[in-house]
Amino acid sequence: MSKLNRRHFLVTGLAAGAAVTIPATAAFADPGTDPGTDPGTDPAVEAASRELRTDPFTLGVASGDPDHEGFVLWTRLAQEPLAEDGFGGMPQRPFPVQWQVYADERCRRVVRSGVSVATPEWGHSVHVEVDRLGSDRDYWYRFRVGRYVSPVGRARTAPHPLSYGSSLAMAFVSCAQYEHGYFTSYRRLAEDNPDLVLHLGDYQYEYTKDTYTIPGGNVRDHEGPETETLAGYRQRHAQYKADPDLQAAHAAAPWLVVWDDHEVDNNWADEIPEKPEVPQPNFLARREAAFRAYYENMPLRRTSIPRGIDMQLYRRIRWGRMAMFHMLDTRQYRDDQGCGDGYRDCPAAVDPARSITGAEQESWLLDGFHHSRAQWDIIGQQVFFAQRDNNAGPAKITSQDAWDGYVASRQRITQGWVDAKVRNAVVLTGDVHAHWASDLKLNYDDPTGPSVGSELVATSISTGGDGADSDPSTHPFLTINPHLKFYNNQRGYVLTKIERDQLTADFRVVPKVQTPGAEVYTRATFVVEDRVPGVQQTYLRPLDPTLRAQQQLTVEETVRLETERP
Image 1 (tube, rainbow, N blue to C red):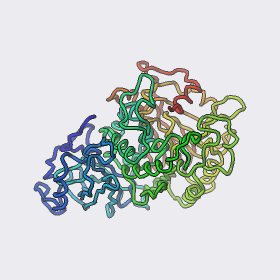
Image 2: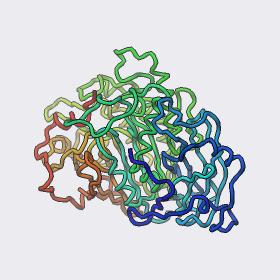
Image 3: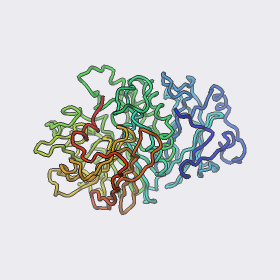
Image 4: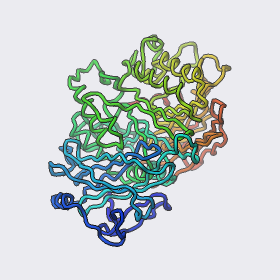
């Protein structure tokens, strides 16, 4: 595992790979002090640090859930990230952690500071809710315990609620299987300098090594058994967080996070595990442990502190008048899949009593549509929203783990934003390990009917290995479902630019993740114009003749690539 030199602070916003070396003792300035002198530290912090043998900031830093006055700052102390007991090699007592927020990237002008306590009960994690900052601007931050100073992170506040602010550079990602490839996509995303990053789920995977493998074998291994206990989930999160490419992406911008299934168990639904026919009497304890570890390792506000097996994750984040982000949880409250997890022609899929969101979250979302005055209402969620029938005949065979397995839920929510006269509805999706773009309909069986929204789907960061390029026009899903407009089975992320008159989405591709260091390029660009529902392609990069290409990808192969699990 690569170890970062923590006395070198990556200052995001500079050119890729640029760093500034600052003496740890002189760089952590207090308000009103000369930044070139050592201001000293709190005696309690100094005393605590004497128990630390090595740098505790091995998991990096992060920020999240911004508003127009501030954001959440996060770190977690761990001297030995992969310790089997999940405590990261930390002494079992609280540690005071100093934090500072700066107005400049050289960390000379302190604007907010304080001390937070990292306790063993919460995995020595730190969550600081910073407020009273200026709107629509960049800030930088870091932490200190005694002589140890964390890397520097960049955060950004949202515009004032009455202002559109400047254009928003927003990236979204999903599905990072540590074993299947290197996190190069995270590194390239950081170099794109987004203002905001959305992670739509499968941040980490639960499997033990040699369980979920790709052709040719995995490029690296998970530590520990399949995650079922708090110690196991903490260790797994720490293994992912210790990756320097993931750390770079967290340090680059604030994140909005929601989970999907692998943060707990593949294809779980509410209180039901993936395979209910296989007894798993500890599943609720497993869910409770997974939720607690998730909170400990994410830049979330105190409103998301888990309470037993429950955790409030769905929430709204306002980005001035430009955008309202409705972040959904499609796992914790859903009915079980009606006919199993795969592609089925399933009568239960159309049962109006079944829900993927649960009644309370659905009501919250519909109410949000009616009260929103945003230019763009963006729904950040996990599983495919548009209909995807994989059968060219009269049968309708769709994925029962996606919204196709909960047709009435999808219909009520789509009709809800239409009735509320939402100006621009855009659904963001992960889960399926491929890039997709789609028009959204009220009636998918009438291809001539009007579009009422747009869906953009991000491929995986690494899940599935390298993948391969193909000509999207030859994909059978696009022929069977005319509202589907794009497909690409390579790794990467989606980078968007949100302006008042349009949303531009670049489907960014890293052609190889089974070896580190690949460059990134834009495979296709789609635009959603203000008040014009649906996606419009404005750029398509030709197939790269030097890369292996799947010229005629079949329905069966597509389904296998997105659903195959151990």
